[in-house]
Length: 495
Image (cartoon, one colour):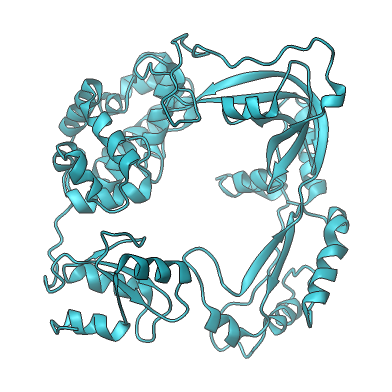
């Protein structure tokens, strides 16, 4: 979204008394999710093509790809430059450090890429990014503004997040009014006093954060800010566990934002995927006493939904259909949806594959939990605490009666030749893609882990594998094998 379009959009919202948007990037993301093409067209989004991807393109370099895209009339930013050495790269970075603010769109850095496509292919990718490209991020702009006060937000886990309420200040293209202060330790580190002037930056040019205090502007007699002792929503005394930075509200069953947050977590796409429900609907359901926990969703009727503002026959039917469809979600999604502290999507999937059923997980001892992939002491303690809670036991029983999947759908392996041995795959291979190797291992009775630890049996090493994994495997005495040796194991041959 061009800056001038974003500014015009916010002027229009101000004129009609609506809250302005925070930044162009998030507004663009929200625009793309809209289902009204007329509104999307009004936003005048633009697209910059930055890479020609395909087979038989007739090009050998990234430069040729950009030239061909330009010739085909795609919108390519004219700011790119081919550099012959690092001096030219650094000159380019310096050139755009301030001139980038003259560009029609927001930007926070420069990407440096290897030009030759054969070298790009040879360098390959990590799990998250190409090895043939790297981003240089410019130092964020910093401004000073007055701290008007601190408010405290309560998350779904009960964690309290202090937020700085700031005198509005223009920073990196947007007006900033609020910034996270993270926790009590950060407030103490900054030595915040009432009425202080603070320095604010944008992390990645998007998220505002307080980085320091302008002590020279502090008023005489200003009092240090004291962290709250009770929940701002329900008044319950806060707790702070040993080794934790955050304070928590322990009132899990009576604190409104915690309950609403857990329900919102439960319905999200990566969990139960009930996309017909939204934040405002959840709030209405809670405030009318219809939903006090995720299990209550499965007791909703059409009459219940018709009591909500904006709901008609069709919208009510869509919600009920979405809730019914969610019962088909796999066990790993259900486990993630439960919202066990420290159990994210990846850990939930590994726990589901390891224990197979919720009952097995709930009944696992502390030692058994530590034997599972990705599980350390903190996660093991959290899981034990969750399943020991009587309220959670009641909730799980209700969800079970509603028909949710509490076990892994059995997929019989092709063979058990790998005997439940564990493998980590790292590097680039000649015959297989990494996902193909992982499927081969799991189909033949093996387990795939993501990290090297003492629990690992084999590290399958390809070309250009991460040196840290290799070194750790050697230190732990883990057996390091090649692609060919893995094939031998799959064929039942010793190595």
